[in-house]
Length: 634
Image (cartoon, rainbow, N blue to C red):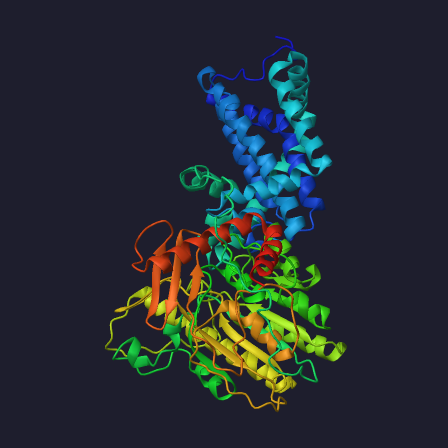
């Protein structure tokens, strides 16, 4: 049979497997070229396909070669027998197409967010692929390359002349002269695998590396959950509710003359910070004697420690939105302008935010921008660790995060006359035990007390975050930034905790500490026992500064000189869950059910849920709706 007419899948025995493997390599060389081109020109040193044990070298192409070799081996085996050749069309070709799109998506997703797509986002969150795919479709070059590769495979399967061309290349490589090139290349690949195997042997967290090395693997094992939870969801637009629950336009009032000097503001949202952590030890368990977070409790002597505060949200970025914008949200969206960072920026401040959670996707960057943060002032874990080696799967500790933020604060205070807003969102208490912290000791339980592993990890994480907060404050005091700063430390949200007989729902009580500048000579009588929530933070800061905002805010200033009227506070989850907090505690409410006995309260929560859902989908309608309601009541 002439070379140009020989079908590419003619092997019949395993003895032909090496030659068949070579054919597979030649046929799929454009695929390898595609992958390596993106490696050479990618700006992402931490992209998910770079084995972390090798750090920044050699830009991940080693794992590309590994995946390529695996695919070629399967291709070669599938080519041996007629009954297996259908795998090439039914399984392998679609898989390769997915590989191409996935790698391109990963690269451009990183270009937009500085966060690898699959390593952090696709773990059980496959719907995020839509964001990356949208980015890819906006790049004509990658779309053109993908189309060329598709045409290559179509020609290989359906054009006899093209198959003959491929076969001639294979025969040339199998010739004596061709082996001169083939053998050194094979030796180089084996050497790279040996280097990688040695590096993997040295890696302490092998399980994490092996589980996370392949985004394709994570994608495939996540498909059942995706179809079960995401693909079957209904995304119908929310109708306009019959009744809105709206804030008053003039919620933020100037309760005192504007301070003469604009103080620096440090706003720290501690991940999963439940009030249980600051209870007296004996209230957690009669056998406990050591404080879990002694430093945080000691701050009461420096400012105001509010005792009856509830989270406005059950999730991190929703909670941050509540703090910055004094609004509720179920989708992390920001409704309108003039959130706290933007108002402060208009009044001469430089706002910065430091978020160790490596999940900043395009829409989250947009939300931070809508709050008033400039893109160059938004720092995530990847950006803060730029240039460091072998840190890809070793998550950022709160100590590193706070140290980095303190360094930026020092630099800005020395280089600029502008005051600054430094927002820090910690992460170590989110998944207790995931973040190794060698700088602090574990919480000391009595030896006679039996403690389950989860409780031990939660207490250790809280104890270490408390240690890191102490170091951060000590740095601010040493650098002279503490005394005249306005400081707020609170939770981004509470957490679903169970300490022995203590139960807390995810919409639960949280700590809140506020310190005013030492230079403030105004005598203030603040009611630290008033019912408060995250939505009260922005109005409180603006009230102290004497800055008026036209933004409608659901919260109110906690520094009001008059005795605050009694009220209830609410928390909203992205599920159908809400909580109503009163002096008697939090009552849960599932939207649309009759679990809450008070009919008026139930109707109010249902209306609030419908309001939040509607404005999340129609944020531009928020301010006009508030203005219209205010006009009708005048």
